[in-house]
Image (cartoon, rainbow, N blue to C red; front, side, top):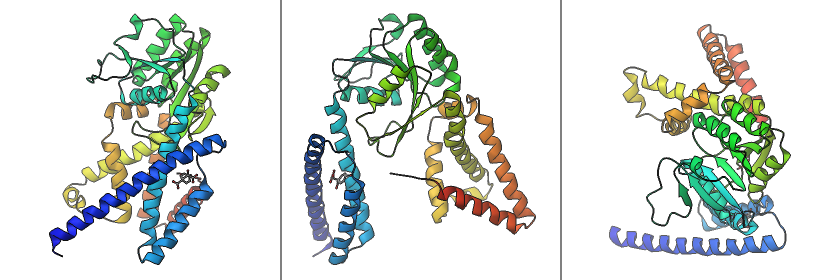
Length: 369
Ligand SMILES: O=C(O)C(=O)C[C@]1(C(=O)O)C=C[C@@H](O)C=C1
């Protein structure tokens, strides 16, 4: 066979593979229904392990790489889980007969929430001064300014940029809506006044931080943080929204949230900004570095590239508006100084101690994906 013929055969095999993937997905939808009627959880780690082990053994007997087979099956299981989670969220029907308003609903996370709530049966209204999305089949009621309409909703989600959110929450407090109100900001200390105003006005208020980006399809392994401002009903209602998903729910206080986020978001963003700034400012080495690779460098460059592509406004807000933001930046500076000190004085025990401490610290970390 010549190259052209071989490529045609490969394309045919790819088509067959994808037809099998479609068949697997179809079966997985049936599994979702079966598990729902038997009252079983969506995710079954024991079964996943079995599937992966089976794939490795089959690969071995076929003379192909077990690692390749495992990666393919991991992707397919992820596909299954995404489909199954969606089925469960829709079947839960937690929003049937209920209405929701998403203020800032055409932004990225606003869109995510609108879709998520609509998939549960909520009738969604989107308010956003950015204009109605140019889509003939736009599925939600649209208003440019929420201030000009009634507030008779079961749920109001504030998905505006942080700076505006505090004002919106205060304005909402004046109108005392009957439904549950929550924002989805990445920081909570800049929203303290708005949330407090709602609380004092007797509104059912909480605050939610979805710890994932707008492209997220599967919530298994993801965290959603709920801030308890003293209104149990509001916290329960917000948690209930995620009740059919596999997201892990964490409830905490407002200050605790921002203290932790200063590290989880603030420190990891800062480290990447420092990394690419150091590279870009490395003088004549900069263009040559861009061509090189090594395992750690490539992994770090991948993360840094994502960070560099994010919104500077949002990333600045995350650093600047956090009451506890300085703490983690100073910790980073302290760590770099300690490193510099050990390296420049040839203090190998100090360097080794840093590595050892990191190893111990990170070994205690549980990660599930
Ligand atoms: O066997 C199941 O319970 C499935 O839902 C299927 C499947 C898979 O894709 O193989 C998907 C998710 C589960 O966690 C385990 C396995």
